Length: 148
Ligand SMILES: [Zn+2]
Image 1 (cartoon, helix red, strand yellow):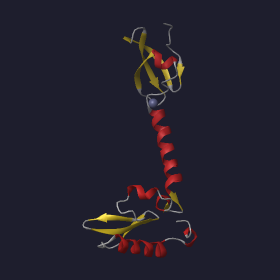
Image 2 (tube, rainbow, N blue to C red):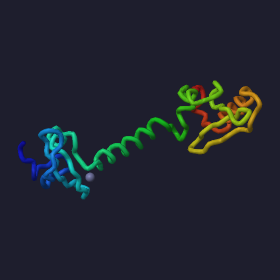
Image 3 (cartoon, helix red, strand yellow):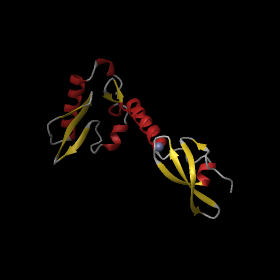
Image 4 (cartoon, helix red, strand yellow):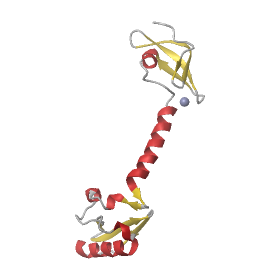
C-alpha cells in the first residue's frame, strides 16, 4: 500500500495513518478537511475518489441544488405550479383539483404567493370545487388563465 500522507483529495488533506486497518489491505487515515473537521477515511475511498470532504462538500452542494430545484419546480410568479399541471391530484383525496377531504366534508384549497386559502367545509366535492373555482377567479393573476 502506497503512502498517502500529505496528499490532497478534494477538500481533504491526509495527515497520518491511524494505524487501523479496514477491509483486508486498506489503511485508515486521519484526514483534515478544508472546513476544519478531522475525519478518519479508509485509503480505498481516497484513492478511488469516493471521498472528497468530511461531508460538508456534499451538504453544500445538496443544499444549493435543493433550493434551486425547489424554486424552479414549485413557483412561477409565486403560484404553486403543482396546482395547474395535474400532479396535484395525486395528493388529493377528492378527484377534484384543489379540493380535499376535510372532516366529514370537503373544502377548497389554493396556494397563492405562499399564502394558503381554505374554503368553508362543504357537504359535497362539487360545492367545494365551486369555491375553488371562485378562488381561482379572485386570487390568480389573469395570465394564468387557460393554463389549468
Ligand atoms: Zn468539511
